[in-house]
Length: 545
Ligand code: TEU
Ligand code: CA
Image (tube, rainbow, N blue to C red; front, side):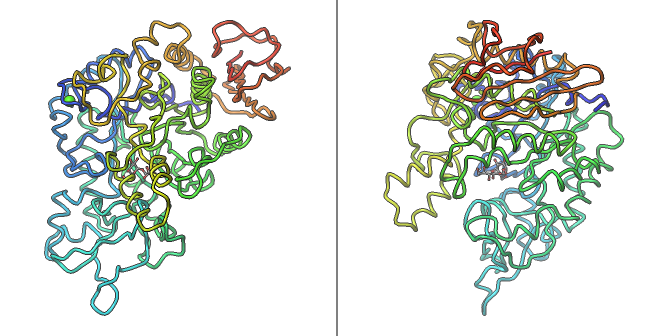
């Protein structure tokens, strides 16, 4: 892949602004806090910072419910702070990517408030419909929200129902209305003109609904999706946005978050220049059972097969193992108890060595893990935990088990404050009380201590990211599988006449050192002491030339 785009050489670091760094002691992360850590991020070696939403919002879904796209939530600062962030980031050659949430808005967005009036021009911005049944007392169709329960809510003030694929505080925009595209393009241009590098587009392959016919799927979650996933209209809109907002600008990026996509249909996003890359959920779904409330062990062969399907299937991937919706990766795919450090580095190497742009979620680079204790849904800050807890009230499940199950879907785990040191509130805030409590793992997983330890996960990431951006085969090369068995993962990255070989033992048992890896120069190893080429140690991973 030639071209010359910043995302081809640079890793993306996802900042969850509420949990990254608190500058004023209110226990909530903010923009000046982010600015104070820009040098840390530059030294880490990432090039692009993606900020989860910082717009004005009632924060029901922590900002994925936007009340005003042109304003910053006061918890995070002001528009001036944001402009300052852009300036300070640019000084350090760091680019900023915003989160674009336009499948839905908040129900507290002025557009939605106005839209309740059938005579308002905003009425047609949303899906307002009469109910079924004699008196319109039933929802217009049988769709269910992806956050549990019906996808429609009745509004007494106008006697109509509105559609929401997520919570009832997140009404869906009606993309059949050309005014919606116009409004969203204004938002996009507003931030691009400010100098933002691009957008991560929230649930972007379901914005255009083909019809409002009843759906066939399971009632539990997302019934009706056959009418809105990957529609022609969706492709058309993304292409239009490209032509209107991006075609005349230089290097920019559009990253899609896409549900239920496969390489065959997803490829079209790239070929048609609708998106530059997109997130699939296939690796994230591997250990989930029963809508994510149960977990199962993932076999390395399955893990490898899934990742490789995408490596071969599309020209450019958005590679990630963590984000603000997913439990931390070490406990899921590594071994937190016995090989925390080794498996943290091993997963890092895997993610960065794949073809595509590597994404690192804040805290991943220091090996942050989930809370040990079972979380109380009453104390959770996450609407998913509340909604699942509500649903469970209907089932006769023992209380303790119920709590345990809800705790697994509670996104507070991965949203806990960033651990800068082992002091008060992990150095995240001067306040001992923070919006989500600090994780006890700050004692061993924190920036200050890891910077001092040459063998730490953090110092490994620093080496890894430097290697990545300076090594053409690693950032630009084609992918080629090397067939292996069991816990061994291996592949090549080939660029013109150069190639590197990636060798990974994703398990705790030693593996005989593979023949194809012998006699090569080692560019990086997850262990400090060099390999004797006899065996691969637990979770040992290397890049060879
Ligand atoms: O996520 C979509 C998505 O996949 C999640 O809703 C997922 O199903 C959920 O986290 C349960 O694990 C995006 C955002 O990343 C997420 O934070 C928002 O809540 C959601 O959209 C709605 O905007
Ligand atoms: Ca603050």
